[in-house]
Image (cartoon, rainbow, N blue to C red; front, side, top):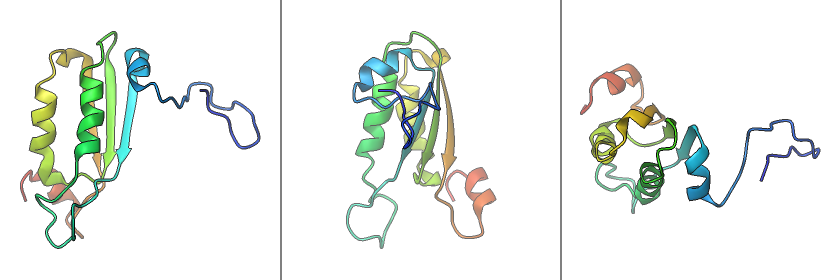
Length: 123
């Protein structure tokens, strides 16, 4: 369904909301994944206690969609920087890597160490 603003106009003709994810993935070129990663239980220990099933489902849906054209995936998430290897493991299983371009825009940084968090994989 096309986007409609509150006043009913179609100001953004290229923005669609759909529940037919598999059907839309065939023809789209740019995909934004924006989701939080909830903790499983108390937030005392973050590493190893993240519920990332929704994130994994979103990535797998993209990976298994037919590669009709290149896809650009922007991941805007609270996925911790030290979990990059898990992201890479899932993406490396993709057979059509020439059709997939991924940029991660993390939102999970330690206070005052943003640059270190981005450059040191396992801090």
